[in-house]
Length: 306
Ligand code: MLT
Ligand code: MN
Image 1: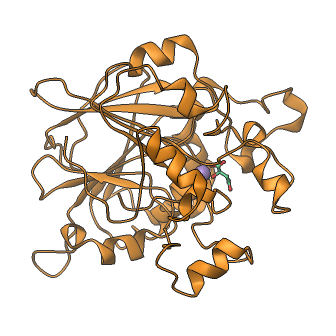
Image 2: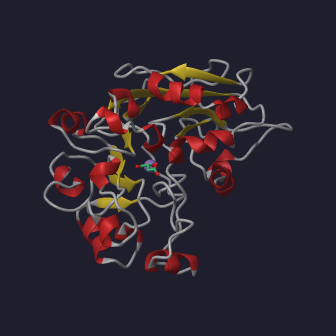
C-alpha cells in the first residue's frame, strides 16, 4: 500500500481542519497518508505500480522493495497500470522520467489524455512503452522488454466520472464520461489458483453486475473517499458531494458498507480516503464502525499477501 489517501493526501496542503492539524502535530491517532497508489509483485523483485501518485518519490523512498538495487541506474518498478486519468493517479509519471525503462498500461481513453498533454513526453518513448489495455481482456503486465511479471490483470468499467480537468459541462449529467474513463482491476497470479485481488480506487455505484463480479473475492481494495456523501459541504471544505465527484460513500443504507455486507469477500480494505473522512482518525467512532463492519482502513506501508 503505497498511498492510502485520496487526492490531496492527508493532511492536504491547504487543509486547516482539526484532523489535519492533529496529523501535522504528529498525533499518532492521525497518521499522515500519501496519495492513492499500490504496488504488487509476484516475485518480490519486480513490481507493478498501480496508479502513479504525485507522492511517488516519497513512496519509493519509504518502501525498500522499490529502491534501486543494481548498477548505476535501476528500478524494481517494471510496469505502471492506470485506472483513470485523475491527477492523483497520473502526476507521478512525471517523476518517473530520467530514461528508466518500464511499460505503461491504460485504456485508450486514458492514453489519449496522456498523449494530448505533451508534458508526459518527458517519458521518453525510447525507454517507456505505452500499451493499451482493453476492457474485459486479461493481460499480463510485462517489462518494457516484454518479460511477463507473473501477474494477470483484467480491467472492467465501473460507474465513475471523467477526470475533473476533462469534464465537459455541455455534455449532460455525467460530463461526457465514457466507460473507459474509470476502470476497476482484477489481479491474479498467472497460473495460480485464481484467488483475486480487486482494486477499485474510484467507484460511484454498486450495480448488480459489479456485485456479482466481486462476490467471494479473496481481497478487495475499494474506494473509501468519503464517509458520507455531503461530508465536504458539512465541513465547509468544498462544494461537491461524493456522487458529484464519482465516489460512493461508506455510510448509510446506500453506502459501501451496506452494499458489500453479504458478498462473502474474505478481506475488505478501504483505500483512496479523503482528508475529510473521519475514518482516518484512529480514535473516531466512524473508524470503530467500519472496523466492526469487517473493513480494514488502509495505511501507507501496509503489506497484504494474497
Ligand atoms: C477524485 O478522485 O475524485 C479526483 O482525484 C479528484 C481530483 O481530481 O482532485
Ligand atoms: Mn482521486
